[in-house]
Image 1 (cartoon, rainbow, N blue to C red):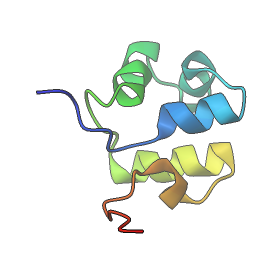
Image 2 (cartoon, one colour; image 1 turned 60 degrees about the vertical axis):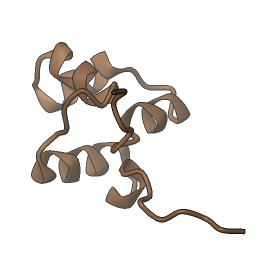
Image 3 (spheres, rainbow, N blue to C red; image 1 turned 45 degrees about the vertical axis):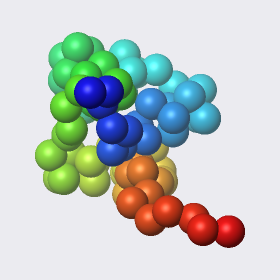
Length: 72
């Protein structure tokens, strides 16, 4: 079964022209950890997700995929 896209970290990084390596440096974490988050293989803890939102200057909700389906 394919990984479900729970977070949008990679999308927001691309939109801002930033890399996972850059984010790893800002968080003081291993680049492979960030890569696993960006591919949705694993998810960051909520407190780390909050820190990522601050670093990227976005609302934390922008880092999460919507769970609601549009019926329009």
